[in-house]
Length: 358
Image 1 (cartoon, one colour):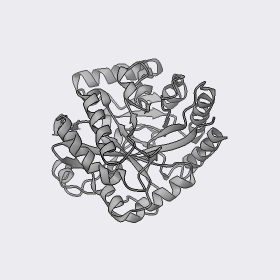
Image 2 (tube, rainbow, N blue to C red; image 1 turned 45 degrees about the vertical axis):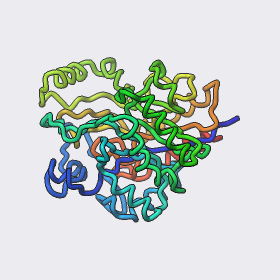
Image 3 (cartoon, rainbow, N blue to C red; image 1 turned 180 degrees about the vertical axis):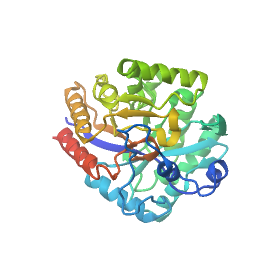
Image 4 (cartoon, rainbow, N blue to C red; image 1 turned 90 degrees about the horizontal axis):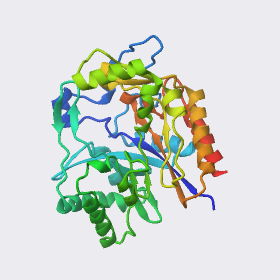
């Protein structure tokens, strides 16, 4: 039996003004400011910028969502895995765009990934918003806040179960309590359960048993010492001793992504599609670049993933594939059209989905 393919793209709901960012970074801040002020540190480095009908779009504009859904759907992407920021005690950030999608029932297919990490100003080593884990009552409150989304026809479900991802399960001290609370709340509201996904999880880690699918989107970086020892040593010095001028740190897309270790035969391990990498717009000289990303190498990466999926001995009824990312512009991993390659990456992804489904 061939699996049904579910293609999801990580989605950053940051591109709108909020009070906290104005206070932390200055009036009118969005990551478009970081992108537009970004500089190249090398002659070969190209800062990718959006090629959309809206330019540097505002995610409080309903038309942006429907345009994104239209071009994603035409190119084999079923929906968006939107980062959701719940810090505990009802504190949320960047929630307004998805509330707009819900309130206006915009044609935008999505599921949430709880981005459960503390926010820092890494340039000045300042904590901006702490992530708290407060137990069953607080987790129930989080579920209640999500419930109208889970009940929406636009929210992505598998066998009736809302898809929900956790970015960093290992950081939740009472993970089993969180999982059980969401399960109980889902059943209490007539849902058959939750379809669980996890990032930052590898095949040997024990908490993977809680999840229907798991991945580690940062796993490629364990190969950086092999790929570029000199850059790796400078990066370690910078990270350990807070040196600010040793970077950016450069590795190759081919070495870290194309020549990465293959998927395990565990069908629950979800493949990650990497759409480039350049975090210097956000982190300046503390950033990391994967040199050599282009449509040709992206095509090779997709072909490798398709081959590995075809070779798996065990198939699930639903095969999830996650793209990193749709619109992480300040981190240089985007499949949304950019000024350099326009629609080429989307066109190649469509061919990949057809091959996997064939």
